[in-house]
Each structure stands twice: as C-alpha cells, then as structure tokens.
Length: 301
Ligand code: SF4
Image (cartoon, rainbow, N blue to C red; front, side, top):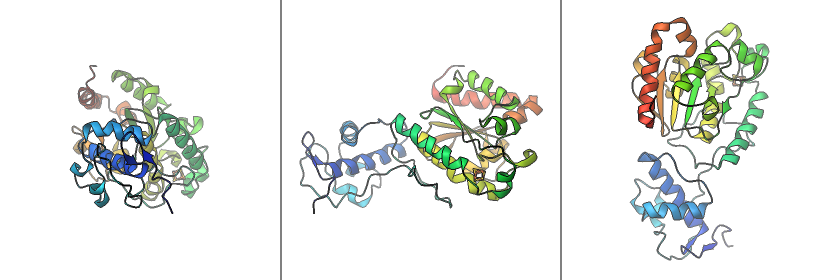
C-alpha cells in the first residue's frame, strides 16, 4: 500500500515524507546551534526555506539514523515512504498532559499563531477541570491558567496565584502584578506582548508555599504551554519558578546573573515582584537582571 505522505513535490523532486523528515531533522539541528526563530507554514515551504541554509540533512549534528538517507532537496531521489519517521508534533490538544514528567531536549515543531491560540485555549479548559491536588481544588475559586501572546518572545514565569489572581482568574493582577507590569514596561515591552504563567494553576491556601507533589502535578501544564509558545526568553520570578523550571536546588542568588537553558529558551532568574515589594533594596538586582536580558535582546532601556 502506498504511503499517503509519499506524494511527490515536483519543485524539489522529494516526497512529502522526505520533505517532512528533512524539515524535522533540520529544525532540530538549527535549534541545537542556537537558531530560535524558525518560519511557520506548510512543510514543503519550510523545507525549501531550510534548504537554502542546510544543503544536506546529512550535515546535521547527530541526525536520527534515517536522516542521513534523506537526499538534499536539489537531488531527485526515489521515494522511500517508509524511511522517514513522523514529523515532531506538539502535545495533543485533546488529551491532558502526561502525568509523569518526560522533559524534551528541544521544543516540538513550532505552530502557526492560530493553532497556538487554539491549543492554549484547549489546555486552559483542561486545567479548569483539573482535580489533581485535592487541597487546592477544595480551596480555589478558579484556576489561573496564564495569559498573553501565544507567540511571545518573553515569558514571565511565577510561583502560584495569590488571592487577587484566584478572584479574577488572571495571573499577576495584585500588587505584585502591578510591579511586574512596571518591570515589563521597563523592558520596553507591553503586557500583551509577553506571556505570564505560574508553576501552579491553583492558589495554595493562605498563600503557603507550593508542595512538591503539587509542583509535580502541575508541571505538565506549564511544560505544554511552553511547548506551544516556545519563547526566546523565560524570566523565572522567584525560587519556586526557578527551581521548578531548571530542576535545581540552588537559590535565586546563585542562579541569577547568567542565562540558563530550557529547551532552547534562554532562562533568566530574578526575584519575584512580591519579594521586591518587601525588600526594596533588591530591586536594583532585578533591574540588573532585566538589563542583561535586554542587552541580549538588542533592546535599549
Ligand atoms: S495546581 Fe495544577 S495540578 Fe494541582 S489541581 Fe490545580 S491545575 Fe491541577
């Protein structure tokens, strides 16, 4: 039986399956060497774009075994419909995120904006119905999924909703949120340009710290969000966000001041706005951290 993906692309002389595989392999390679903004669009258009920069998929670093068998786009080759594995896809929007954490080395293939927005909406509906943490479910008014641009260049990643967030169902809307808005503006960004989310989607009672089990339970949700958004920068606000994302035991003071990596995103660690409200002297350190990111972004404050 013929592979339904093995249709010929007459302009490049490749099958659909070969193009799809070449695109997946080349995307993985480009991410590994630091290219973070890749084109959206159909597989064939993407493969042709990549062909300008990657003459042969065999040149990619450590490609999957079948990748070496994919000829360069300029060469007409016979169809090998069973040679190419399926192209990487983001988490299925219809299914809940996996219960156990299975970190990837890089994000899945980037999606067009409309598809990102759809997937985030579907995830938000799943989160709203989540009952994994019995104590939080019993005390929450509503879940706080996150909000902002689905193609944000910068994501701000916090700890957990507070009372005001629990009331409104939106992240960072209390006093700490107002300070975060100023921090975002200081980066010459607008709140609608970035994406805001937390490690936990439900407010811990009396604003207590998140428990390890709760962090584990909720982790698949923020991982799935980041898989969809694929930001260039992630700003971890406070200890729980930083330790959770980076799987680290180090303090904010030890983690800040340099970039870390999360699947190709540059991760910056700084103090949570609520901490800055209580410790005004730490604001200058947070400003230093944001300035470091802006310099890397090529943005002047
Ligand atoms: S904190 Fe996360 S995992 Fe726990 S009940 Fe809320 S949405 Fe579900």
